[in-house]
Length: 86
Image 1 (cartoon, rainbow, N blue to C red):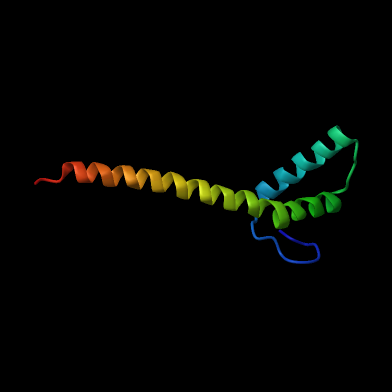
Image 2: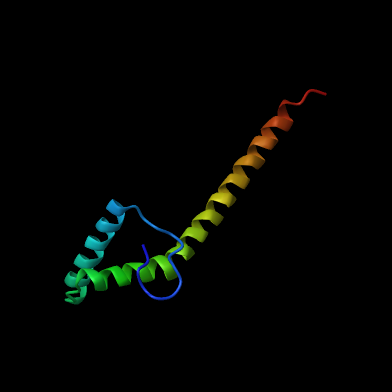
């Protein structure tokens, strides 16, 4: 996805997702800030988010899933101990 200078985006979208994201971003900037950007400029903004911001959300999601799975596995382990015969 990254066409800009610097490091490449860690997270990428498929073509349809990227186009939808570009449209949402372009519309948001126009409506909220009265900022009419062309497709190249909006692509640069999206690339910035993909490179610099999205990885933080991705990593947070991974940590949340790890915590959830840890709780679930502990619950399953407890259930298995309860089934053990003496």
